[in-house]
Image 1: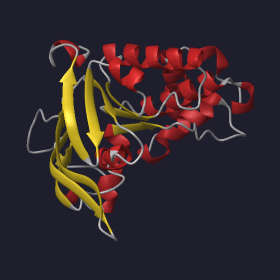
Image 2 (image 1 turned 90 degrees about the vertical axis):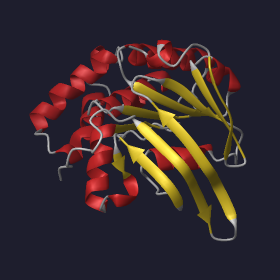
Image 3 (image 1 turned 180 degrees about the vertical axis):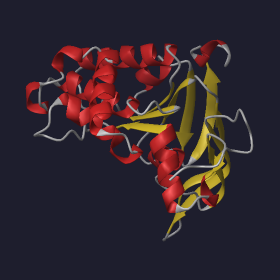
Length: 242
C-alpha cells in the first residue's frame, strides 16, 4: 500500500493538536495535548506510572487513535487513513524499541533485524543486506550470526534498535529502552541513541527516569494526562541533531 504525498511538503515529524484519549469508565488518559516534534529532535516524554506517557507513545506511534483532536505523522492526519494506509505509514515512518526486546529466540541477529522489513515488500536478500548495515550502525556487525540467548542484555537492545532503524524511519520511539538493562548497558544504549540522533534520526524516549530525561535536549513532562512542562537544554534548532 502506497501513500499519496502529504499536503505539506515539509511537515513536522509528529504534530498533536488538542489530542485527547478517553476509555470507558471515565478514564481520561490524554487531556487536550498539544505537541510538535520537528525533524532531528531528541526528546524525552517523562512522567510517573499512570501519567499518560504510554498512551502518548501509542498515539504518536499510530498504534491508537485519539478520541478527539488531531494527530499528524509526517504530515498525514492519522484519523483520515484507512487501516491499510495507516499500516503503510507506520512501516515507512516509525520505528519502535521496547523495554522487552521482543527478539525471536531461534533466529540470529541478522534475521531478527531483517524481520523489521517484512511488511515493506523488500526481497529476502535485500532485507538481510540492509539488516547487516543496520547492525553495523549499532556496533554489532560482528554478532550477526548470534541468536538472542548468545547476546547480553545490552546487545539484545542494540539488535532491537537496529531492527527499528532498518526501514530508515523518520521517527524512532523508544519505550523505557534501558528499563531491563544494568547501569553500564543502559549507558551504552543511551550513548547509541545520542549518536543516532546526531546522524539525523528523530528520537523520542518514553521514560519514568528523570535522570535519562535530563540527559536529553528536550523534556516533555506529563502528569494526569497533560503536559505540565516542555523545556529545552539548548534551543530547538541547536538541539535538532543536524
